[in-house]
Amino acid sequence: MQRVILVILFTFWAFMTYRLWQVEYAGQSLGAAVDIQVVWEKILNAQDEAKLQIVDERSNHLLGALEWTPTVQREAEDDERRNIVGMVENVREYTLDISRGRLYAVRSQEDLLFDFNLNLSPFPSQEWTAIQIRLERSFNDVRYKFSADAQSTNDFVTFRINLEGGEQRVDVPLEDVSKPEKLVGAGLKLAGVPALAASGASLMVKNFLNSKELNNRPVNFNLDLPRQAHIDLLPGVRSRIKVYRIDVPIVEDMLVKIYVNTLGEILRVEIPDVLIDTISKTSKLDLPKSIVLRNQNFYGRLRRER
Image 1 (cartoon, rainbow, N blue to C red):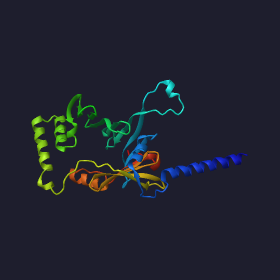
Image 2: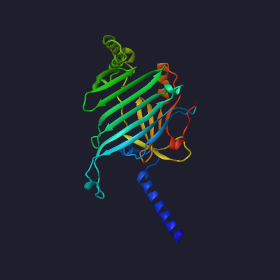
Image 3: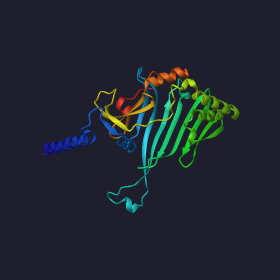
Image 4: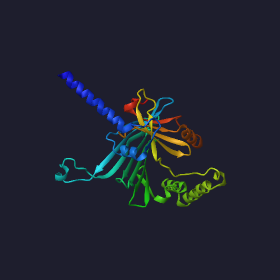
């Protein structure tokens, strides 16, 4: 009798697994296109947080870590309606959080700490309602704190920097956020540079971006979001795991690749090596040769070198 029950249970499990595979991948071979809206809704409604480690894959060196957490906030209903079986609660807001972010320095006391929060209205409008960014670091025994806050009900972004108990603040109109010269001016004001000098620096940046040297290489600061994802295999793991791959163009053909499983959990994010190399050369910074965010549940957990 027990064997019969086990056979029935196994058959049921196999059938449901097959049906799930049909729903997700039927007729979709590797490389097949998937509407980005389908994948985006899975990401927003993912049940679990993703613990991601930032790794230089060429050296297998751990660079940092963060936690990615999507949250669905639903409309509060009274107890009587909440207890109705099958009652569908309306979504009030979606939240995407990056928490416990840390980029490792040589000394752990000088690690860069960061957090990010994005609030979105429900479908079909799906517009941002609030954005917060926090950065914090100690350097030479001095604690620096930086923040950026924006609300959709306002027409500006507030930037703050806190240093040794003193705070500098500047408000930048939302329409100016995509203008590098405006951001340079705001950054200089935060650093305590006189307004006249900050305005002069902003003008220099604007003139450079409009210079003849850049006429043949127009600089585009608008991010074109992809309209579709593609079926792919998760790279760098032993198992054959089918995923959605989202290619986000940053500059020309430089693509940030995001790998998401069928439950909406982020498994891997690849920063293009060409972009890293370009930034390293232009800024004279000694950056890693590769930067990849990996879900430690699928790639294992690396330990920080001491």
